Amino acid sequence: MATPSQHFHQVRLNQTATLPEPVKVDGIIIFRSSEVNMNNLQNGESDNTSLNLLNANEDNMLHISIRRLQNAIVFNTMSKGGEWGPEERVVLKGRFDGPNSTIAIFNHPDMYQIIANGRTIHYFKKRIQGDVAKIRYGTNAGQSSVFSDPIGVETYKDWAALVPGSRSVL
Image 1 (tube, rainbow, N blue to C red):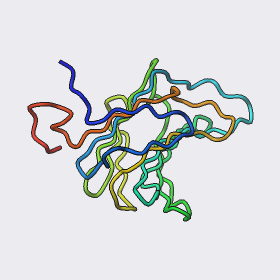
Image 2: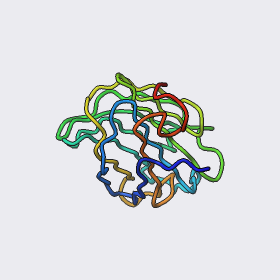
Image 3: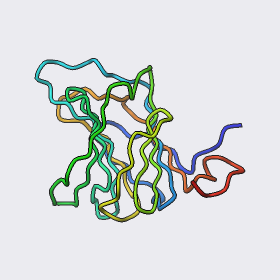
């Protein structure tokens, strides 16, 4: 039996979706892409596919940037109208092999746990507080995305909402 998500959204490339209910601490956000494009770069093409978690003030609490040319997944934050903080990076190669992809983000009290295709790839310590009120999916102008357009986004209030019969702890 399928477990219904608290909410399901389709977010188009270079669009921002407002969530009907904010994702609070202990919540889970799952991005699902029906395709993965790791090889469609033109020489000189800028390369940045991003998934962003925004609070109600539109501060970018978690920016996940897939950069094929740099072989990197970059994590960062930026207050609305502010500047980017220090980047945190992991190697991209081998993270999104296969025809589709899933990225799950667990919203812990002090950090985000980022899971790509079932494996934790990074823990990002929170620099900006707040509930996730919006999701932004984008690329640099004229660039092809790593992921499908649209991308599916599921939100859950906690682990128990995702896995029936479990307790609400991670």
